[in-house]
Image 1 (cartoon, helix red, strand yellow):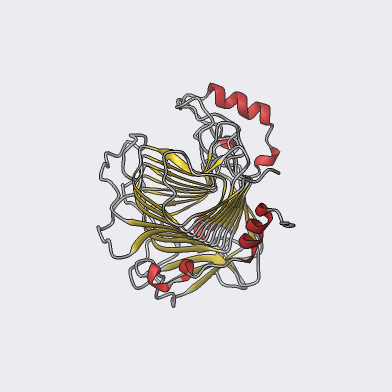
Image 2 (tube, rainbow, N blue to C red; image 1 turned 45 degrees about the vertical axis):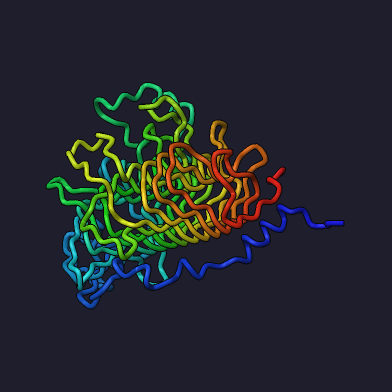
Length: 403
């Protein structure tokens, strides 16, 4: 007689497993910070922008402090709450390091700076390169919004006229600057991002990026743009190397992200995923920058934990050359209309291997549409594969979670 339910065995495996694949230094050959040996500046909510920027006499705003940074420099944020005075972003960051002399923005050792904002962005990182952002908490204050008012705003939104910034807040947005410089060689690490009306971490037109060891939760509820916890969208090609991973999303924890407002272009609840790789092969003609080159980089999604998201745990859409390995996905697709823990939509060339997936009783582990060259191997699955996918790679399938 089996005294332990099969799903309990899956949970035990999830809690006890650890990743070797997700910590291989060779993965980071193209994305590794160097040369952080320059001047160290400090900023504090109690500081002053006319000060020296030292530990004893810190700057007063992140906006001003970031403008002082040169290759090799570090900016450390002291303890306290930083708030926006602008409706667009708490701070704009345009730092450009060099290949052998990166720039770092981080928490001061042992201190917990919190960026609290109701603007469209927490940090708007535009045209940045060779930059590390780490150890910072972002609070978008979306729990203070009235849900009925947010839904009513979303129903009337048509992307024309002024926006109410409260419904668009993204914690970290990495994108091109006004001169059309695309971001590359960017690391976002060890940040805690929560209660943003829009996405948690969102990148557009990026290359050579590492999104690592972040905690992202309860984001994306109220934006009419259909956003997610971690989003990589329409990447650009800094070069065409194929011998290293150029986009890496690993060791993150993403949970209870969801959409409560419909995506205005589709009229449906489209996203609220833990992680999404979105339209890297296509140009959806939303940015209007004329860039239409398919992304050529290899992509790694490894050792992330995604649970209880309204959308999929991991959503792969119109993107190629992805390895999805050693992730733990538990009871995602919470919302009606969502079907899969991992969805593969119009994907070419994808390895899904050694993942642990615990799906709800009425959901499926992996599925999608219009896919080519998909390998699904060595996964532990609670919940079946979609009918169109062949279980040919030694996957172990146990009963679905009935709780």
